Length: 482
Image (tube, rainbow, N blue to C red):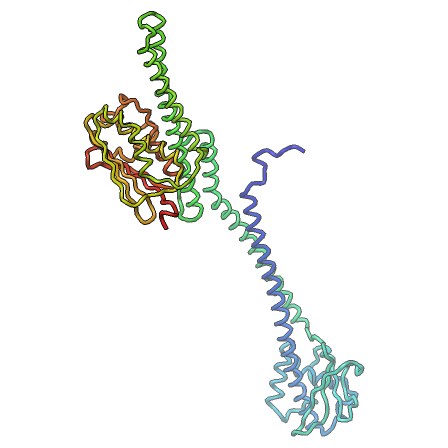
């Protein structure tokens, strides 16, 4: 089966148009049937009430004629008189109403006088008190409803008419038909108006969606600067805002990716270039392959391996692949262990260390290996960037449910606007803490990944000693917290 071209597919505009139009048509039809039912029942009730009134007036007419004649003999077998008396209260045409008013206004008028006829009246019978038929054209075998004919309070006979007879005359039918024709015309006009409104509504509602669809295609093609102008404050406006936030995030991630690749390539190029130069110097006989040369090569290889390990850790952190084994860890012995292990390096740079902790043990729920990596990275950052003869102050304390590790070193410091970026990958403050220290720029980024994986928080601010103060917050172990 051949596929439809994109311009021939049943689009969402047509679907929305049909949905709105169908809803309006169903509503119009339901309302039409409801109006029809209400009209039929109301019109039928109106006709029945009108017929009841006619029969009441007709009973009065027969009672008046009986009072003047004295008995029913003037009517017995007299079909013409039966017709004449019926037409005195005939509801249509309106001449009957005129005759009735004339007869009612002149009680001494002779009802037996000759009157014009207007066709056959509705079926009915006049019965005397002995239930004998006086006049009429109804079938006496039918179920009849009776109304007494009273003269001066005394019953002189019965006016009977068949039950369940709907006495619609020609004018009633014509009026009903006219109402239905008018209702049908109004329904058709309403459907036409609904179609026009549905069309413009569908196009108007989908215009922002089409703009977003076009922008999404451009975004998927790599144009991350694509944005959509928001023209409303409704849900579609919210969708536009969400799309623009997505564009901002993708643009930022793309920029970060490009910078990351450029920084990685730069960081890898430096030790590789040094290794290449050293090996070429050995090959050309400029340098002898002695112990000093081997140590220099080993230092560059170690630097390169450390960079690769850091990149690998960050990649694992990004995909949630860093392995953690959580247990209750006492924080003070772990910090002192790392500091004592680097005592030689600290003494070589003449950096004094102060460690303060409360008497009560501070126990955190953490992976001890990753916690050692965190403290080692912080210490390595101090060793690389703190001036010789500086100071390092480490403070441990606890709050209600958090352990706080404060790491402060002395000059050089970091500008306030650069402090939030210290945990970005490959970020350095070029003039004060430069690449000359040998750092890869990934140590603090790894620290942030480790802290966040433990459910903690890390932030940097200016230190009272003139350098940088890094504060780490970690959740306390349950036992310590209790």
